[in-house]
Length: 147
Image 1 (spheres, helix red, strand yellow):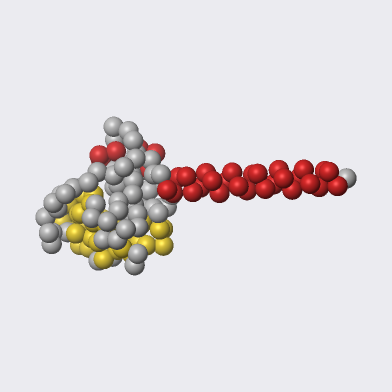
Image 2: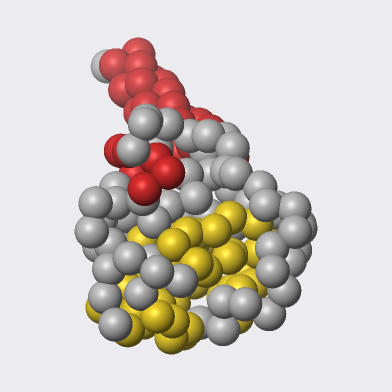
């Protein structure tokens, strides 16, 4: 009976540790390295990402304009369309499209950006589009696209 309790405890421990390992491996090694733009046009539709979240957290643009997300701290940030974790709110987007031929058309950096790295997306759909940081889902924002 003691052996059964010990074996049950060991099995439970292995399952928990495996789950933690898988979660951390995904968070630390995203699906793919995000594209980096070395010289985004300064002051034009730029959202900074830091350990405080997005700044500004709300941005109003016109249809067809591009928004550049820039990481301004050493922690990783992964801008993407809501809803966490599927990223499907912006039309045609979805985390499952990362690493495919459709990746360039989705509102998802598909990977972490670190200090000084940036990623840009052109908004061609009118509406109010919520987004978040996939690595820190408590950080959210809104892009308002007008006609």
